[in-house]
Image 1 (cartoon, rainbow, N blue to C red):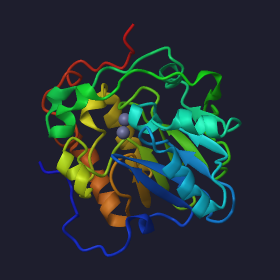
Image 2: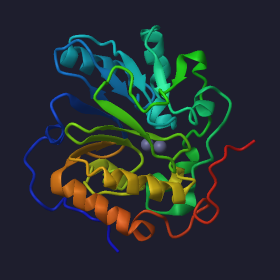
Image 3: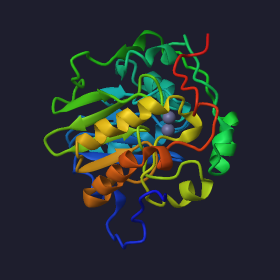
Image 4: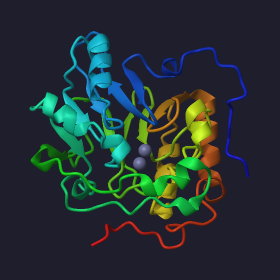
Length: 281
Ligand SMILES: [Zn+2]
Ligand SMILES: [Zn+2]
């Protein structure tokens, strides 16, 4: 079963034009950060912080777009190194900006737990083969890292709510706006074959499950994708790959959900049979 792909059809628009006007993204090497806020408003929220060394690129883009480089808050979909690579630099730049994540992700953000190591045996390409080299150590943000509000609300974004979408990591969250069906999905699903260095380079659009080398619980990942499909998002930006919208998104997600075991779960791998979500002691 091939993953759903629509990359053969012409699409002249810029990738960011697939998102509503107050949501945009910035690619830092292999991973996206998302910026939410009306351009020129001086108010915005950052979702994820990209690869290490990305802070100057992020603040420059923010200054141009919003008129201020300082976000109201930093939200983390999860704590993997490529999503938290610049969080410490940004926290230093903006000492009073709060950082939010799911409470189950906080052990990995406060030095109390490490992620399971990247699994090279999932196959799929050079990125997967390199997975053992990717950092899996938790980081320590200290008391600055706070749990997202238990009622599902999102600080500074009154129209949005967060959903617990575990599987790729224990405390993984996605963000959704009911008003227009905009989804920020982190790595719950992604729009590029992240295991393949070539696909990452070209950003060929194709809906996939979470990056396989870092996903320890496929049962939970399947349930999370089903939850997101049920939202019928109109537009989505994910942790890896270009934004998607409309039929391409809905059909791709439905295909992923209904063929999840064939499309998303690797045929073999360290975490395929024995779903392991608990941090190592
Ligand atoms: Zn991840
Ligand atoms: Zn990622």
